[in-house]
Amino acid sequence: MTDAEAIPLHVVTGFLGAGKTTLINRLLGARELADALVIVNEWGEVGLDHLLFEAIEGDVVLMPSGCLCCSLRGDLIDCLRDLLARRDSGALAPFSRIVLETSGLSDPAPILHALMADPILARRTILAGVTTLVDAVNGQATLEAHGEARRQVALADRIALTKSDLVETPDRAARLARLRATIADINPFAPILDAAAGEFGLEDFLSEPLDFSPRAGGADASVHASSIRAYAFAESAPLGAPALARFLEALRTMLGPRLLRVKGLAAIAEHPDQPLLIHGAQHIFHAPRRLAAWPRGERGTRIVVIVDGVDAKSIARLGEALSGRPQIDAPDLAALSENPLAPRPGGLLG
Image (cartoon, rainbow, N blue to C red; front, side, top):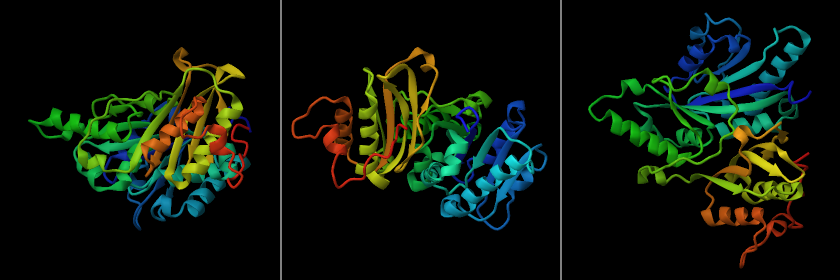
């Protein structure tokens, strides 16, 4: 199966009560999603959200077994494999997209990891983006109190604010500004779109996340205490494919489980006009996909790395190693990745 035939898979996440089902229900009314397959995860014995999908044309699969991150290697993988097999055999109508709604308590990192680690799913599907919903009424308190909510925001490609119209005045503008600053501090690379104000629509949901430019942060110290951070590596000159492969391998072997996600576009000297789209979750990387052209004409490597519990100095050394610029008392890229005791590169660039 080629990349063109692989099925886009959209992950929709957000804490309890953020309005995931409401948003998906609205989006599924569009013609472009008429043949989308929806997988709804439930927390509890009764799948109440399933009732909201009864009027939707198409296929909805309900997984009432609990939190997705607790049953990844069983229910979710088996469910997706079974659906693809039924699609191939004609027992299930063809679907062009998959929309996966996680439970409000799910951590997206192991979900993305499982999708990339399974050889069948890694070949048959393409991650089309992580959309995280944040409830504007309770979002500030939720982000301060719950690590799951912070990780949902940290791993997002785009943030959709919900219920902003329900935020009480007179300090409504200040509360929304504070929430945006908190979100931007956790994830400075994801655009924040107000769904209640009509800023988030079908085009935003379907568009491939290719903008890795940082945005301003500035949240309260209570959220600064989070160990989750996002960093960007940028290089204007094209990289050699071996150097990029060693860098990705160094990320994987040095950071291990502290590496939550990697995403970005890379300029490769061998094909400077066709950037590589890179996706990784924890220590698993999806096969890089070569794009036909640079988005919006922009060029240059920009790789976003989301980590948990990694000091900024270690990240900075990786960045310098990628560039090839020598440092005092710091190893170069080859030294970082060519430790004879470390796992050898596994063909990250094919």
